[in-house]
Image 1 (cartoon, rainbow, N blue to C red):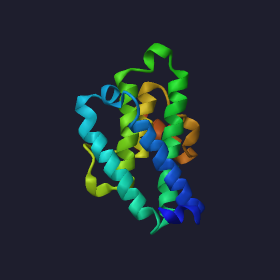
Image 2: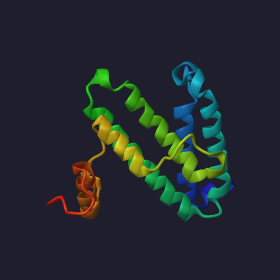
Image 3: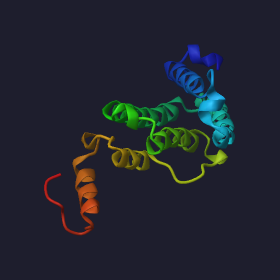
Image 4: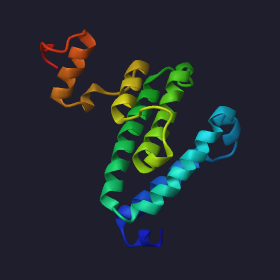
Length: 161
């Protein structure tokens, strides 16, 4: 990643992967991650490596994918801040943190696979269930569709969205 110094996009990818690595591998990471998740951790680290291998080929694509990860990460952070402290360690909240890691695998190293489907939309839905993803992030069209789905209708408009 020597070219990172020559390209701001590559420097951003390198900084992002360093931050991801630091969040995954730290003092007490084994006990905090848990035995069940350790194989996933290996996959996340392989995805980091794959991303760094490919970032130089198309820095713009990497930047777009990084923006998607940053959007859901910011929504996750906002959701955590809004939750009562006792609720922040809930299994559903923790699951969203791992969904974000799975999104990274899906975006940067799809050939490594994920245990299930993952997307920005699915992460926001999980945050909604945990009380999080801001509806203000949706377009008006998306809000109308979301409201129709919540109301159990797919044909008629659900009113102002």
